[in-house]
Length: 121
Ligand code: SF4
Image (tube, rainbow, N blue to C red; front, side, top):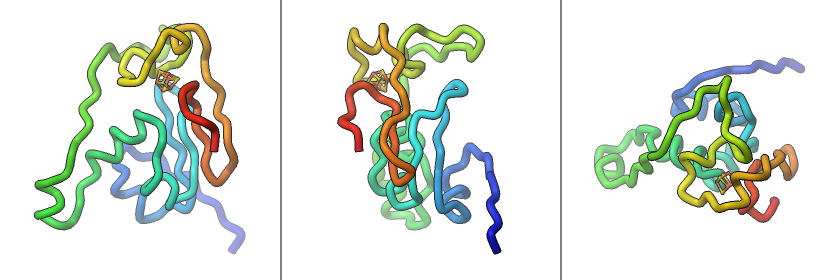
């Protein structure tokens, strides 16, 4: 039909059922973008992984055994962003370069990530 819809939600279990392409934002910045398959089976950005880890699985055995990735650290205000990477105060992989350089979204429409420590796709 040549129709595009933008659907905004926090519940990725819902997004999964209606989206061909998924974009994840953190504090107003796009941190990962990709096709449905890439985002649900090959997510790279640590915030995306944490979000995906809490998606409910409609199988009680798998749901009980799944590993949830809890995020620690300071949640900044979107009007007072940290220097460098916007996720660095909560990222388990943050290093000194992450305090200095704000990463750009790199990759393709198939899969793109905004992280200094990920070899681009
Ligand atoms: S750039 Fe650094 S802080 Fe940001 S997501 Fe990548 S590793 Fe984490």
